[in-house]
Image (cartoon, rainbow, N blue to C red; front, side, top):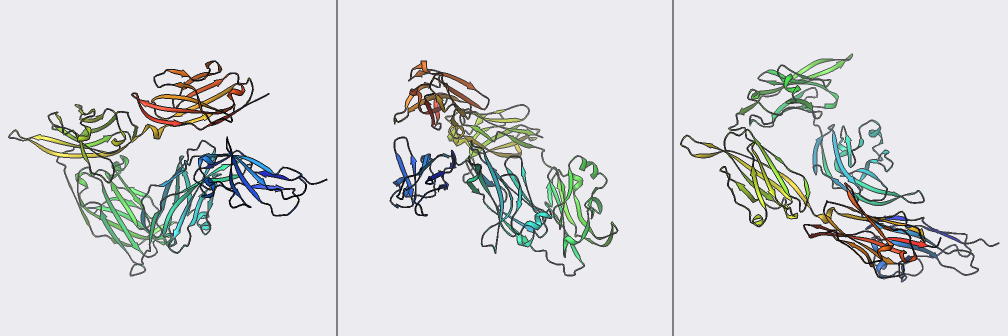
Length: 628
């Protein structure tokens, strides 16, 4: 008995991402004749079959496919047919196989928001973070890999990977450091992937970046890569630790972040130790002010605060930390008048014997003098605003003012982006008069309010996309002189950024159903889900019969609430379900007939105050109605 020929394509439906190449397998078995077989792929469209590619005919592909190879488009979606050409002899079996291809949007995002360059010394700790997310509706997994492209590397080397099954895998050449705990990777919350290297080496110098890959599990249970993104890089410089002139000696240096500052300012006192082979030595570091002890970090890492500084540590006003093998940092968050004086660092080199530390030699830094002056005023300004809002919503920015004694005035300014300069929005004098309204705002509802508590509020009645950017409030305090003249005494300003999102960018429309293949007289239920800002919506339900090119209107729901029917209302039922995060429009066919066999789509328009702001179409959804 002859062996029948069988051909099989990858089991569908398959989901692949727009803009990426695809690879779909097609296997044939049990055939007779030559061992080399020719194959061709065809995509079936509602009205015609479109040739994609053939191994035997270079002219086989239609124009839409012949000019590109590795760039999937939305219009490529459909039923893919793989055929193997009959080579003669008896015909014993199937020579074609079919699978369903769906093309989905690329929603994978990956970014690095840290400094584009860092400079560290050998043995210093390194921590980098990248943000990775995907908004696809399909169930996908993500893998993230940190790479290093060293100066002598021909290609980037993978350092460590958090795989799609959440297992951590070190890259080649980094295994020993990973097992010693010197390389690690953590997932923080939902989107942050953190690389940690407690002690960098000279070989770590180069560009660090992370790459994200999105995976989907096909119906045959295999995992397929469907999208990938790479972040910008951080250029890391590793400085060699130079040996001191005498192998047994070391030096100490102290620096203040500011030598002259005002009360309430932050103050950093940094002690730096220079010695040969720093990681192999133990040091005890003490900060002195006017030769009196302030704080100490012992060789074991234990922190000790002295005298009145203990209370300030408990109040989180002062702290001391070891920031690297060579640097120790004392931070005073809000300086007082008594914090001025001469600061020094006293450093003891110690050895450990039988679990105890023994002092060997001491070095003192040169003194660093810090002067602290009283502020003319304790005027402080704090800005409060939303980071983002939707166009059409009122924009409100508040500057809270404290520590003032006299009358206040405010000027509000705005700039669109980093490449532009600040321009006036509106001002309020210390006498309570609004003036200096910017040219862009003279035809809009803009005002600034002042409460007795000292809060200034900028209000723009209906925000626009052009209102995105940075806002600055400049607050001035005024005093009355002995001669009765009012004079500006002090000025403080604060600025912050806001993004005004368009309704169109926030709105998303999807059409789903669990009843896409039903028998005659069964029920069809279609769910059109609209996600986005709370605005008035207009919805049109559209239908295209099978084997037809004409799309007809079933019904229209206007943003005013009016409903008109384009089809026989007796064949349909409609319900609307507003939810906290979306609005759901449900179209039901209680008893389906062949007239309802075809393709459905919902079209949604968004309105604000009777002005259309967005228009979105859902995906098309096919429904098959067949005899029981």
